[in-house]
Image (cartoon, rainbow, N blue to C red; front, side, top):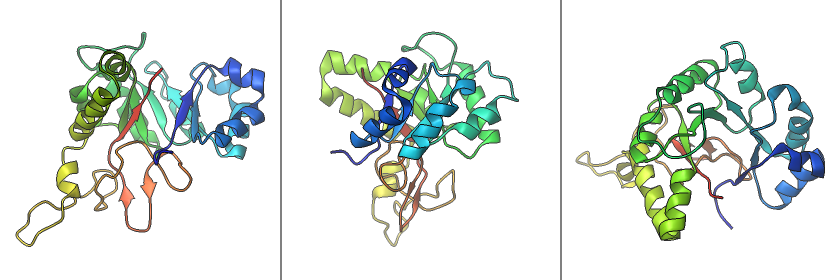
Amino acid sequence: DVEIPLLVMTYYNLVHHEGHRRFAHRLVQAGVAGCILPDLPLEESEPWCRAADHEGVETVMLAAPTAPDERLPLVAARARGFLYSVGLLGVTGERATLAATATELAARLKRITDVPVLVGVGVSDADQAYQATRVADGVIQGASVVRRLIADGPEAVGDYVAEVRRAIDPDWTAATAPPTRDGDPKAPVSRTTGVDAPCRDGVASGAGRRRIGRVHDDANVDACPGLMLGAA
């Protein structure tokens, strides 16, 4: 059992073969909160999205750097949980630098939606994650995680997650320290909501039963940058 939401990313043919409602229901039974179907176009997504909404599965939509301005609001309106902002054109994998398109698209999306925007594809290390989250609400990393998992095992992945977490929210350590009278570390004001809210799990997460998005509880709103990790 984990305390953070789990998502699956797969090809639409598996969903089509299983049937929309049955596939969505099985995800819920398995404890999965959301689904990414990168090969399902927006124009053909309504049957799946309707079934997913009915079963309580959040469909994460992808936005491409080549999308015209008039298309982005349509993608954002259909998105649940968060928007996957594709950082660059090309295959997935690690890069030496963050592509300019990564922050450019994230900025375009932030202007037209309140849905959290996470940058994926081409975010390869902690420094690039920091750059991306100066604009976006979080990052998605797969190749850099899988490489460490294969080469050095789960503990190396844990160390890397901690490194990225510190990079994308440099005030996190201070935020979790108890305040003192002489002005030592206190919870910072969240850069996205203006609420005093130290980060808790550091992963794109949400209200209720493992929902995706920002964490809401009786005490505060957690709006720290999100980190979504993928492994094959």
